[in-house]
Amino acid sequence: MGGFPVYRWRLAPDGLATGRQLRAAGLRPGGQDVAAQIERPRRRRGPLIAYLYRLDLAKPVRPMTPARRAALAKANAARRCCPICRRDAGYVIPASLGMCTPCAYPDEQRVA
Image 1 (cartoon, helix red, strand yellow):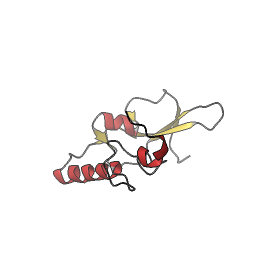
Image 2 (tube, rainbow, N blue to C red; image 1 turned 120 degrees about the horizontal axis):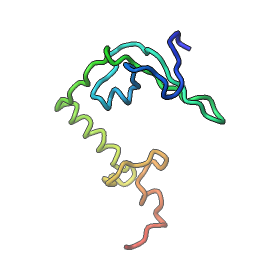
Image 3 (cartoon, rainbow, N blue to C red; image 1 turned 90 degrees about the vertical axis):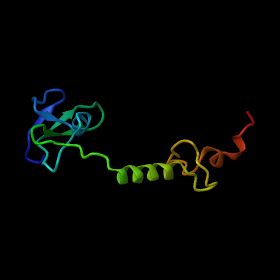
């Protein structure tokens, strides 16, 4: 443990939120340290852990700038481009394949 309180699943006090809950509310941790953690027990493995942040110290999410939007669009376009055939696959190429489906399975392609 990191010297902060540990709560059971769904028993955290008001005023604390996970990173996802902050994001859904349009907030971000803003550099604050973890205030607490919650643990969700599991049967066969160790518990799931989520870190909690104080809502009163959270800051608003920074607005998307045109440059950031362009960089994000470029990164997403690169994830759709097949490195083998250099075409836009129309979907994000799975990391498990590393190429588009027609390039990964050329024998299984049928004429529709």
